[in-house]
Each structure stands twice: as C-alpha cells, then as structure tokens.
Image 1 (cartoon, rainbow, N blue to C red):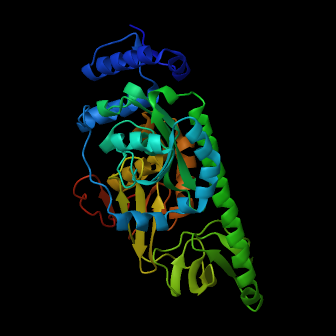
Image 2: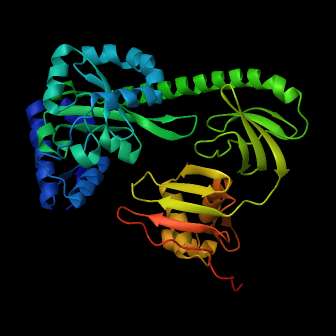
Image 3: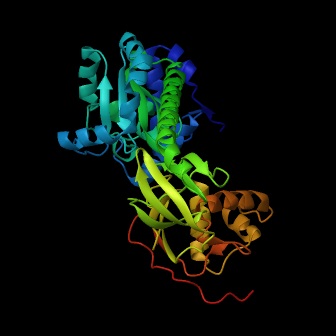
Length: 419
C-alpha cells in the first residue's frame, strides 16, 4: 500500500474537526504499526519513531519540574537571545496577538525563558504547560515545535495529533532554531503556539524569517564589537614587531600585523593571560585587552604538546570534541558526520584510508572525495591531534569516547605503525 504524507496546507483548509479526526487516525495507525493510505509528514514520522524507541508515554509524556526562578534568571542573563528580544517582539508579537498565538523563546535545552501574548491565550498556554521554566525538549514533551526543531536543527510545524503526546492535541505550534553567528552554536528556538483554529501554513515561514533577522542582528552586533576591539588594539599593535593579532572572546580576529589574517582561532576554555599553544599559530603569549585578547606569536610552527581528546557522543546531534593539554583546553562542536569520522578513528587507532572510511560511513568505498573533503574540514580545527596517510589520531594523543552511559576505556597512543 502506497502511503501519502499529509500536506499542512490541505489540513489548514479542512474543517477543524475533520482535520483533527484525520490526524488522530494517522497517529493511531502509526503507533500501532498498521499501514495507512495517509501517513505523517517526514519530520513528524521521524520524531514519532525516535520517541517510540525511547519509550515515552504517548498519553502523558514525562513530567519534569519547572526551573527555579533563580536558574531561569541566570539562563536569561547568559542567553544571547536576550540581545535580540526587541527584534523578535517587533516581528512576531503583534502578529501573535492578532492570530491568538503565544510567542515562546526557549534555550538550547528546550527550557522556556520568555513568552508573550494576550492574556486569554497565555491562560490556555498555562493549561498545556507552556510557561516560563517549563521543559519542551522532545524527550520530555514529545513531538513539538520547540523540542523537535532543536533535534533536527531546522524549522518544524506541529499541528494537533501530530503531537506525540495526546495531551497536546488541541494545540498547534511552529518553531525555528537560532544559531549564534559568532561561534556557530545553537542557542535556542523561537516558537509560535496557539489553539487549533489558529493554524496557518504561513506561520512557519514567518517564524523562520524572523529568526533569520535575529541572527542578522547578532551578526551586526558582532561586527560592531570587532570594530571596538580593533580601535582598542590598534595602538598596541602599532608598537609591536613580528606576528601579532587581536581576537575577540570567540577567536575572531579584529586586527593583525606581520602575517595574513587567519580564520577564527580555537581558544582554550577559561583562557587567561600567559603562554599557550594555539593552532595553527604555534606557541603564543596572550594578554587581555578590552573586548578580547592580544596574541603575540613567540614560536611560529612549534609542535603541539601532547594532548587528550574526549569525544562526547552522549547527545544525538550535539556531539563535541574536548581537546586538552599543557596549553589549556577547548571544545569543538561536531556535526553528525564529523562525529562518525572521529569515532571510526578512535576505534581504529592504527588509522584508516579514505576508502576504508567511505566503506564504514556510506557502505561505498568509492566515496573517497566526500571523506577527504570532510576530513579537510575537521583538520582545520583539530590539525594538531589528527594525522593523515592514513587518517588517524596523532601519536601521543590519548582518546576517550563517551556515549550515553559510562565512557569507553581510554585509548592511549598506538604502537609504532607498520607502514
């Protein structure tokens, strides 16, 4: 039997009761494993399958307490989304009021930090638990415009019985994630939610457009901060000789002397003044300046000190590599593909050829061009811990892989290679 995914525009044009019955029928058929001529949309089906595997209760979800007020205020103060709230309000609140929606802003963990809307819709949101401090991550609240957007990292609209948890079937929502252009970090999601009658196929494009405006505002603020740093650092750099530069807290260069401008530097966590080995510069002297750091290259091309790398694969789609050594430590977020590549190299410390990696990742040893391109991107950030011919972790690097449970045993440096 051929299954046709539901079209949201068709749902919005249908009688509300008829659309609800259709969606509930699709949900019941999917959860029971029966075939149906009409099926869920791809994002919804993938979310349902994740939640079925996780064992989430499809009737009630999972109960998680609200964040304490002090923790909510701490997260608000630390969130870059605070800087773009005026943009979000200008773009969405008046429309949300007219459409009987709530504007919800959540952090990268799905915790609601802000919500705005008319009093009547806010009261309805209270019934559904759309309140400040609540947890709308997918693993807790089921398929929804906040949590599912965070998982797939793209805009998602969820209507009525497309929600995995039955308690939310009288609700409709559309969410789009926000990425900080300064460091590429996922910082949260913006969502419009409301009663079923307020569903409209243009809601998701609207939310997406406003989140892109918010990202553009963050980018403009970043450019302005780099200009201020450039002005503060210029007199200092003008009195220096050799290779030096000023970078902001995220590693972006504002001013450079004695060398071509590098790309963004990977700075150690909790950076302080002193001597550090910084890829790709070598050993450097670092001191603070207003808005960032002044870096003088003291030993160009100096070899990297022995390092340890921890691959954290415990959170799907949010993998990271933490590199530490004598020069400090820093974290590099990993795409799912890069996480797979590094995991393969951790398992095979003797190294893998491009063809072997292509076979393991794609089941096709001929896809070496793709592997080489991805490894080239990885080595821009992790060149001092990765080697090539074959691809492998460099000698002397200790590797630890962490999954959802206990970490795998640490893997020390391999024995002398035989090639």
